[in-house]
Length: 243
Image 1 (cartoon, rainbow, N blue to C red):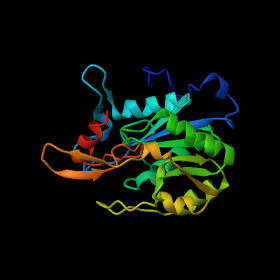
Image 2: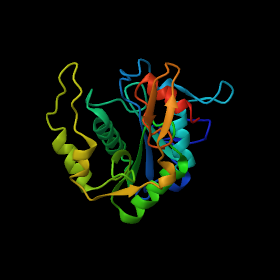
Image 3: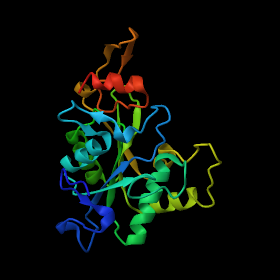
Image 4: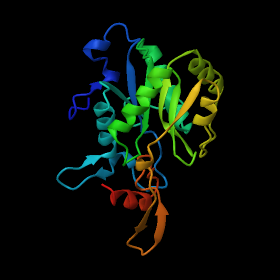
């Protein structure tokens, strides 16, 4: 349970009062935390966001975002967390597959998932709230794109429906990841099989900055974008400039 924000530990069966029994109106928050963090060189879920007095791990920060966006029920995907990967090395879609199978086994079927990867240190709750609203109004899988047209397939509002069930059943029927490889289905391939839409972020949230790192390397990066992804130590240092 994430006591800091009083969010519900979905895997424990302790659902919010308005979601007990019939869960057809529930949006389940999902943090994807099953990556190997190989490029970062350390577990990304444990990276501390903030100063020493007010820091949150990236995992706790991600859960806080979902909670502050209006969700009461949150679950964590990953081998060291609530729902282990059923198919090892299958990437984000493998994590979604594991979550869906868990929900089916527990007979806790949400109307949709709001999916957040654990490595977006500049994401905001209001941005996730916007994504959820657009998805709920359209009842379509909904993701962000930049004003330039570049798509970001996660974070993702993902309705639980027959399209999703059919895709996952077909994608993981007899699916095996070879040892040492990461070649799971892509989010893009999933989206192609269901109604979907992209939402353009306000231009004020996407601004290129020039960041001078301690190595004196000057690099133009989207560190002012809520969609900035931290995969490497350099990415993390750049993101910290905006905390």
